Image (tube, rainbow, N blue to C red; front, side, top):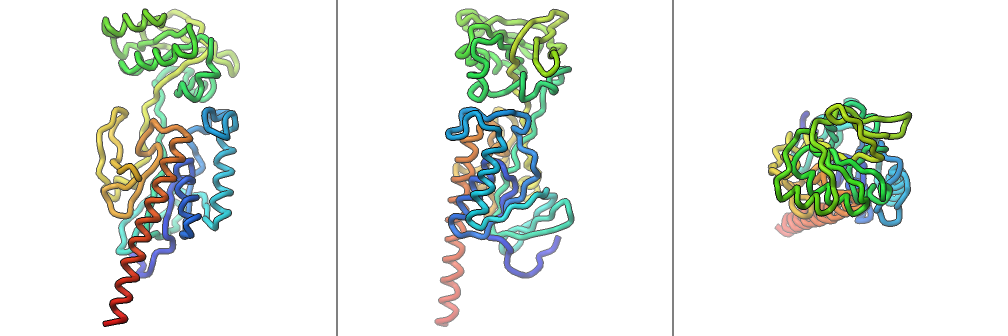
Length: 318
């Protein structure tokens, strides 16, 4: 890609139209910025029937929040397009982005809010139940699992704390260690004190009857459960951020691009928000993350506009 030798088409380009991206875009559009949102149309929670714990949207399908968000951005003259960014490079006055359909566009500031891909443990039958009988977030699905027979499919020793957390919603919780680790003596004491059963052995299959999860098979033994909580491996969709040389940092969930509280990366003018930099964010907190980044991006643009105005004034006065 080459610099086309003219000013950027947009003040801000937002890649990703989930909660974080739309939160940023709405803030920028209301600040009278020229904003373009480009989204591939594959939200992380697409398999979920309902969103829970989202103030004002509790129990609504995830698509409802996104549809309203897109309409709100458009109300303030923000532009939304379907597409996928494939490459990006720095220009003197911002960034040039190339898309899968061959088109390009440019922006003074760039926000990447492209989320993560969830890689599930390799257990037959698990993917078919993902978003229904197999879920990830106790605060999103704990109430719907109250008093049920819950299994926590662990992938590391962090499963102990997650199993203890799930005990808040049901007295019938079993920790499936999946041969991933051996609970320490202290862990076993805590689990026993809270009435959480530990079932060792590899989980061989998640069992279903039609669309309904009915149990798990562990080391040849069938165990009836109503809900399986699992912690997938979150793989950030951050190729564009890395392409631009954004610094990364080690987090508990892996290596992610490092950002300030407001979403600034190590590359001037490049921002990131939402699950792409923090997979633990829920829908509501991702919206807030994007909103804060949008405000910071506008303030960065104000500083650039002021600098340009001062330069013009100086040139006129000689």
